[in-house]
Structures are given as structure tokens and as C-alpha cells.
Image (cartoon, rainbow, N blue to C red; front, side):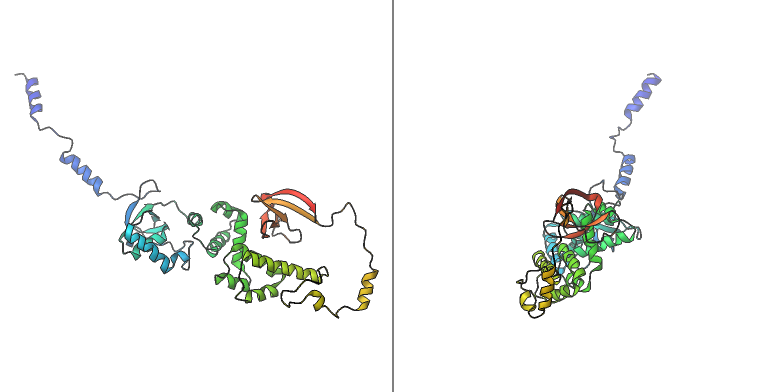
Length: 349
């Protein structure tokens, strides 16, 4: 037998490997022992121990958010106890505590899991996350109170950001941001109504602020009545009453108008206050001829956020390129960048 034949026979007599020898098992064992690496949301959810997860101390939702009430957490806890967490939470690595995580979103599911005495929770690890992302997430779920939104906007303004930048960042209109900025510095009577939860509608609060600037005593007295409901309709009636009162003081209101506070008509309240000499003096006044080339009262109709509005010409704008507007449909007054306003018509009032 030749040397070549002997070599071939020896090769055939060697044990054949199946590809799963001990050397291969060693590599496989190493893979199995590796911990899953943190990712930016590319992989699926992992079961993370609850005791390695912390809530973000800077999350937009505060302790008094209705979603964090004991009753609300108990409700979600019962469903988690029965069915588990079906929608994973999102976390990021805690830069100040290696090996621990901060919640991006899912604090209620986290609290509900602890209530249900769970030890782990499904979670995505997403390190590309910031406070604006948290606000957007909660805005989309309608889980933020007006105060929480205002506080976030206030923090962003303190960083030097413009209202327009913040609006774009959270996917809202500039008017939305402006309305919530108003909540950061409310007059005391309105702040009390808002903070107590009596008034939650941001539009209503803004309308009250507008009325308060012109008639602080009347608005404060109106709010002092705890039985008074704070709705868009009631505030609209209040503003109409205050405007009628101002017209009366200027001599333009119907004398048969009943005063909402005294219950008397203007004529009854004014009996004996006007002497005959005043009547004679008024009778001597001659009306001026109107100039046909001039508008008695200009009304500038515009569009903002696809809603009809008009410019408020007698209010000083906050800055160049801005103006005060009033929506035609609900009477809301607000500041707006003129770059976001479309001119529709110039009319005579």
C-alpha cells in the first residue's frame, strides 16, 4: 500500500465532527452568557428588574397628576395583576448610576407593576430621549395637565428658546404656547381658581386674564362667588357685561339695560343725576359731517391656524412683528406672530 493510500486511510479513520464539538460549544456558551447590550430602540423589549428602574425626577407629569392618584394606579395595577404589562415601557441608561435605568415613558405602568407586586417589567432601552420627547408622548395621550404643560414651556423659555421654537418642537401652534405661558403669571384671584382645579380650561383662564386687565375689581368679585361656574359661556357673558358697562360709562349704552349687579336699569340708577342744563348743553351739539373717504372704524379680518380672526388694533403688541388677535368663533384673544397670519379683508365696523 502506498504512502498516499495510508494517509488517506488514516484521515478516514479519524472521528468525524458534527460541527458541534466542544470547541464550538465553548463559543456558544460565551454568547449565551453575554448580557444584552443597550440600544437606541432597534431591538425588542427586555424583561428588566423593577428594582433597577427609577422614575425620571424631571418628568413633565407631577405628583398631583390625576393619572398618579392612588385610585388610578390601583386600577392599572389590577389589570397588570391579571394580564401583565402588554405595552412595554421605555427606559434609558441612568448616566449617574451605571447599571440602572430612568423611565422615558411608562411611569403609570411601572407604578402599577409595583402595586401588583411584580418583579420585572418589559421595557425598550432607548438612550436617544429628552424632556421634549416626554412632553410630546404625554400630549398625544392627553395625560398632561395645563399646569404641567406651562411649567415645561417655562423651563424651555428659561433656556433662551423662543415661543415659536417650542411650538415646533412639541408639534403645537404658537397660540397654544402663548396661552400656556399666560398660566405662569396669573393674577391672584385667577391663580387661586386655576390652582384649585375650579378652572381647568386654558381658553377660559386666558379670557379671564384679558377681562381682569381692564376690570380687576369686577372680575375678582365675580370669582369670589364659589357657586359661579367657570365655563366659556359664563366668561363670555361676563365679558359682554363688562363691555356694556364701559359703554354706559362712555354714554353709549341703552338706558334700559339691566345691571347684572344691582338689578336696576341704567335709567333707574341714573334718576336725578342729570340736570336740565346738561340736557340743554347736549341739545346744542351739532353732528359732524362724516368724511366719505375715511373709515369710521376699521376691522381687519385675518386667518390664523385656519380659523377666522380679527386684529385687535387698540392693544399694544408684545414685540415688533407680533399683534393681538381675536378669534371670531369663540372670542379668544391671544398674541400671534404676524408671519403666521393671513390677511383676508379690511371692513368698516
